[in-house]
Length: 187
Image 1: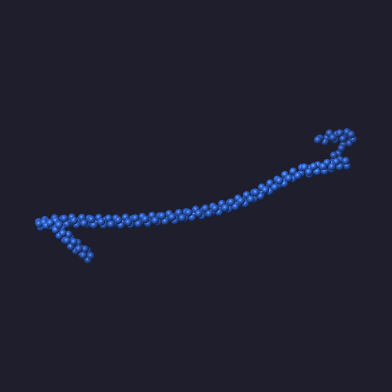
Image 2 (image 1 turned 90 degrees about the vertical axis):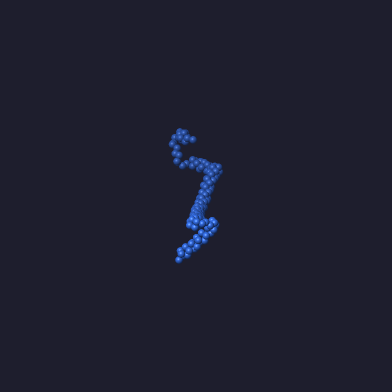
């Protein structure tokens, strides 16, 4: 509502310019009555919803702060747990690496030992094979020597005995010759 037209109407009747700030009993009384009525209406119908809204808002803010504190505490707890699990995982990883190194060293040692054993076995087999081949070669050389000696003896004597008797005679001769050579080599 516009106050200026009301003031102009009042000026025309009295001839004086009304002063809004001048205190008169009539105006002050009605101002006080209107203020008290307005205060009563606001107290009855406006302040409870406003205060209820403010209290609800304060409660929501407090709940949010409490929830934030709980969330922060939970996050700190989870962070500590994650750090502990990370430390445990690192220790387990280091243990696994150490175990793997030990296992690889053990396998390496076993492989080296197996290779050495196999090498020794191969060397032993090779020596036995060489010994066998040497014995066969010596036996073969003896036979050839016997055959050559028999042939030479047969030509010299020009009389040939039986092959079996010739062989027996030469084997005995070579046995005596070999025994004499070993005795001479030992001295």
